[in-house]
Image 1 (tube, rainbow, N blue to C red):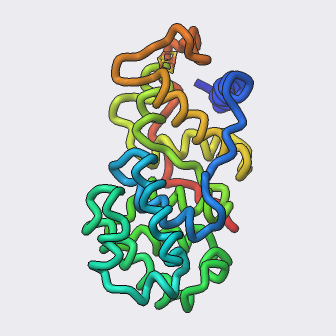
Image 2 (image 1 turned 45 degrees about the vertical axis):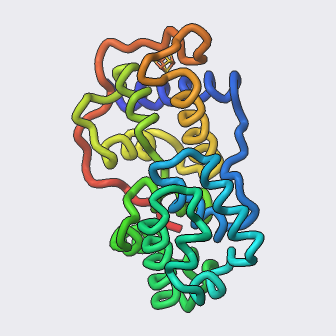
Length: 234
Ligand code: SF4
């Protein structure tokens, strides 16, 4: 399938979703550091549990890099208990904070002033931060043009034959980043809309009837094995 056709399909998909659902105005947070902590806390849990943990951190006036780094890991774990896997997540938040203070003197703005490709590579080395978490931080906290994919994205793309079963994170990300304009607002809304569809319609047992993507069928997968991700520059 030609690149032109892939581009067209991805735009049709977005337009359908945006007209029916959007805009969703992600990420639900007041400032970048809150987005970062939320992105780590949301691993393997429902967002409602993250909201409770964020509320506790706010009440304790801990949603600040220096103040959060100053408390014991056990105290942090207790504060984020509602998010599940709280000991593991406390370790991961501490790992991110160690990185932030070692590389960027604890300054979030300085961190995001880094070249996006270099920052992404470095963040992927932080213990417990995989590509979905890192890309969520880059897009939603740093406003960098990096597309986020997740299990919802894969299920929707697979069911519409836009990828093959074996497609991994990079391949799915490349599908969007190589066929859409490098636009933070577009990437922001697109991912949020796909998550919405995955949660409300494209569940393990799909509910196509009311879904905005009903009838969007293709005969052949558009995805192909591609070169390593073209990383956006800042
Ligand atoms: S619910 Fe049906 S129409 Fe909607 S994305 Fe899933 S497969 Fe497509």
